[in-house]
Amino acid sequence: MADTFVIVGGGLAGAKAAETLRTEGFDGRVVLVNAEPDRPYERPPLSKGYLLGDEERDSVFVHPEGWYDENSVELRSKTRATRIDRAAHEVELEGGERVGYTKLLLATGSSPRRLRVDGNNLDGVHYLRRLSHSDGLRGAFAGGGRVVVVGAGWIGLETAAAARQKGCEVTVVEPSATPLHVPLGPEMGEFFAGVHREHGVDLRLGVGVTGFRGAGRVEAVVTDGGELPADVVVVGIGARPNTELAEESGLKVDDGVLVDGSLRTEDPDIYAAGDIASIPSAVYGRRIRVEHWATALNGGPAAAKAMLGQDVSYDDLPYFFSDQYDVGMEFTGWFAPGGYDEVVTRGDVAGQAFRAYWLAGGRVVAGMHVNLWDDGVGPFQELIRGGQPVNSDDLR
Image (cartoon, rainbow, N blue to C red; front, side, top):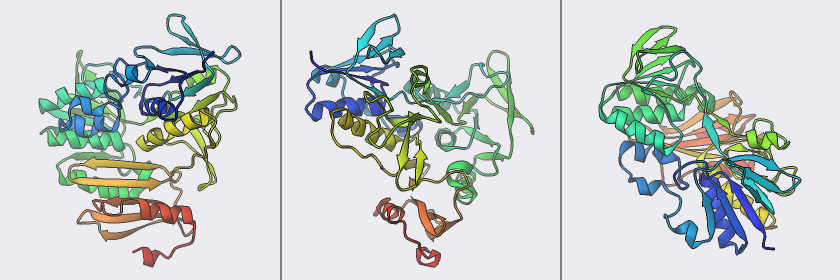
């Protein structure tokens, strides 16, 4: 019988894995289990160009509508995988159908972290993860009004920028001392705070949210510093990996599904990619799990090649990009929260055109450019992979 490769997760990682299986010549059965009603799409536009209305809906999809039929990929949309029977090599779907697999890829992604406070279920309180969520926010922002964003991470700041560009009155509430405190640290967090203040955003830093108030629909955000009137609320307080399926099947999970350099779990026929994969990094000497677009884009194909028996050693450096107003940036590398000694900048920070280097032990561990597109992140990655001590004055 022909081999059957099952992919659970219809995001970018799963879709690119299916594509890679076909481009690498696999002619067996490919089943792509997708819990969402839409065919696989990319998520960055949901808080950037598509949310702003600059990109058409069709532009967000990974493949054209007919691609799955044309390439004999069985796309099971609006279908959840509920259980893995590792002994029988079967995935059970909602409704009880069981699909046998030769190899299985878990690419189940992440879900937004929920704010567990009174009023969380009021109309007008939004989360942003799915295409339907972005559709809802597009409509909400189009009317102007008062928008309160809870959380000053990437999703929070990008949605705040979109709301301001649509003419909304925007307040951002964040318990940390600066925006992006965890991923960038206070130095660059303060830079992005300045960008948003420059565009009229009211930043309430060091402030926590204790509830939402309204009669059926949100009217105010209750904080430990008072109430903020709100017509629309966006909650962006991070994401959690969807590891339940892996955990319930007995696979090792520790802030992600543990995989080796080929993205294979301890079960030789099960792989994991994208947001849920905890991957050993030779560069950083530890496991890291990254929820960014590039991890899904590159991890899905790497896992597919490994499933085909190819020699794969996945050790891509994390990469992320963001667009807020007229500020575009690219970031590469990684550090644990607070896991650096200094940030060195080169260029015109006030003019919003510069490079930043994060150093730990005298070595570059991460880098970012703002509005300097000629070299991209390549020079940063060379320094990070080189691992050699550098002189801060030379970087400046």
